[in-house]
Length: 125
Image (cartoon, rainbow, N blue to C red; front, side, top):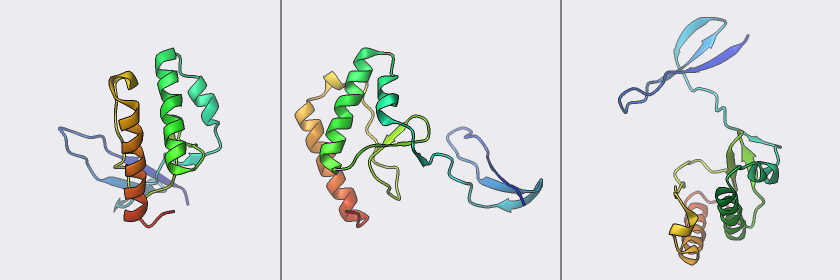
């Protein structure tokens, strides 16, 4: 039996439910399969593939900060997400336009504290 996960796009700020179709028959709401999974792709190759030199440099600096804070090597998740651990939440994202707009020392402290809070909250080492 073949399963196909389908997700309805967001409309006006609301997310519609996902459904699983079994052999072409709608069986009602169910959990969709997670498509962004850890894989064996090279983090270095991904970072080096960033065309913009400023963005590539910033990505490498943040990667180094994350490695120091987590003590873990980065892994690719999907084709464009660099991750440093498996958690039950995706609520640890910080979006910056330019790395040079923030104090690197403060950012590194923020990352370090965030990692400690997430580890404590989710009992992860």
